[in-house]
Length: 484
Image 1 (cartoon, helix red, strand yellow):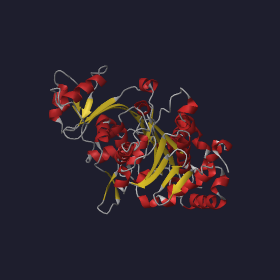
Image 2 (image 1 turned 90 degrees about the horizontal axis):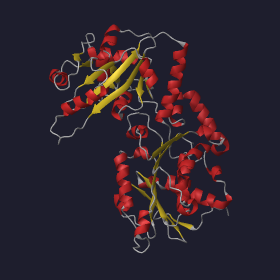
Image 3 (image 1 turned 180 degrees about the vertical axis):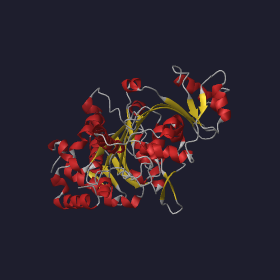
Image 4 (image 1 turned 30 degrees about the vertical axis):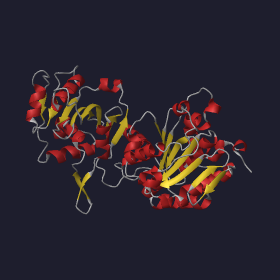
């Protein structure tokens, strides 16, 4: 019989997960082992990986180790549909139980639970389609410390996951004497989220993976770092055939890339830090505003290097909500924010849509005194001309510190579709506030069409680096049969 002490933990998982282990190990090994050291700074771990990346296997190993190292901790495994548990997570947990030699955890396939015969700890498995079972989870000893959501892309949104976490944690302990008030203050929690990213960048879970959150660790993995003997010759052969036969499908299934649905309008977006040195080198910059009485008000600072056909968006405001209790309107509060962003360049023009004459009057009047001008129409179809120009740019570089809403509106913007879903070579309408602010800001360049699109070795190298960065940004993920 093998036991945890007989096993080198690094031999249990894809070496790519060593960096995750290094960050969450203090939580996993428990307080007795780590002493006064704090637990992990992360309480939410997103594990994205292509097929055969082993991310679900890693999540299951972590679940076992967490509970074995702290007798007060219990765990829950959740899928969207309960009937899928038996052929996926249950099978996985049983396999690792045997590998670790944890035979003192008694399985009950009827109730879908494991129970530690020494401590009474439990692991519960359930589907979110059985809400009553989720709400009724209650442990006999200790508290629920770790929750694993497998195939998380199948859930409706992040709120659904958060609500499930809150519901499970409310279950508490049935034994009032099992924990003291001091114990309750020492409780530790972790949520594991495993999934294969959907093709569309607009899918909620792909957006969540891009959203910065201090307590969330996002990790990506692929089969490429798995020992080949763990995958097997048959699967490796199938992978190579798909790579040759259908490269896009290969990138999505095995590299876990967000390959797109064919509706993405801007395929030239790069998100990175735009340095102060770069901004200082700009020989000019422009500003644009898109008004929104009900929609958001958006302000952008932009610059286009016409020789390299690269645009930069390096500052912005996205005002969706405002303080209704301060006696100032939404537009007045927006104007105050804009003044703060242009305090060193008050003489520069801020371009806007001519339909916003009333709004422009407020920003150009006292006490704001901003230099507001109306963007001339860009050809017979101003909107189509502006968006077409933006598509032709080699890159539209978005500063990583921009508001998330601004970045997402560029990244997720989609083409208009026919009623049957067929994409057209025209911009859609949903989420166009930030792109519109850009075309107002750069209306002069768009009307002149002054960009160079000639091939350049340096720029080709830049594009190659961008393609790598974008695939890393959107990440990679998991499916049911990646348990090899």
